[in-house]
Image 1 (cartoon, rainbow, N blue to C red):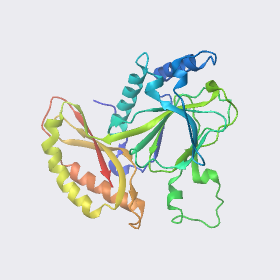
Image 2: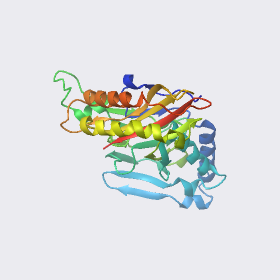
Image 3: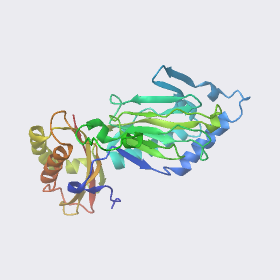
Image 4: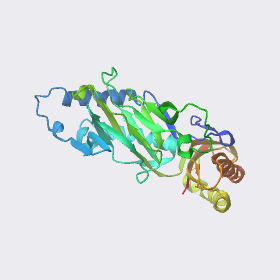
Amino acid sequence: MAQEFGTTLLESMPGHLRITDDFSPTLTRQLRAEFELKMGNPRETRPERFVWDWWHVPGQYTQLRTPAHDFFDTNDLYAQLESSLLDYGRRELGCSAVSPIWLSMYISGCSQELHADVPHGPFAFVLSLSPKKRSVTGGETFILQPQVLDYWRDFQPGAVTEERHLATRLKPDFSRLTVFDARFPHGVTRVEGTMDPLKARLVLHGWFLEPTPFFEGSLTEDDATDALTGAMQPLFEALADEAPASGVLVVRIYVAKDGAVTDIRALSDTLRPHPGCGDVDEARTIILRLVHEHLSPATFPAAQSTSQITLPLVFE
């Protein structure tokens, strides 16, 4: 049986941000070593040193970037990176694809101002290859906190409000994978302290795409289609009438050998209410209740062993 992830559906909490430290540590060490080999000696004229684009949009973006495939196209490292991220995306986000991955380097003066990645995909990611011992200042990913995006709902006139109350700062620790709701405004604080590529903020980044059901265990997609369709059609009808929210809810359905649903767990929940449609908790409660009510009674074909179905539900 697959490892259990997430929390019981009706007890889940919204989450726009998740952090995984030591993500694929062997692979990230190999990627870092490859970078140091190719960029370590400034007097060498390796072809990979000439792939960098100086991306400067005044007042918005300043960084060096290159398609990661163009830099890590040897030793099958890019394929391993893509495979590792795809496995994570399937297991935890219900996503079947990952965008082409960028490699970006931030030396002194580089930064990104606030922006959102709405057109690209439901989940953005940053995987740090920055050196373990940091000798620069800045370079943190900063993301606006949820209450800022609905500022007046919980406004307290007497409370002290500083940056730490408005945004989350995340250090680019080596091998840290940061995944977040791409709709949230975010940026990168200005780096100062080095012009040396080996000391720079170095990150891989992109987006998880194409939310898709996944099946593990004895049940195949063909086996589960009729039962899922029977549960999903009335669910969609109910949600169309009573679900004033947008975002992605990813659930995992646990199915016993006899076909009964034994548990439904939330893996990811980025639901936010539509403008003018009430409280976020109320909107989420309606959706979670309806999903639980319609999926729990589903009966799947009997099988030789237990199964798990990862089911992403996208609300627009």
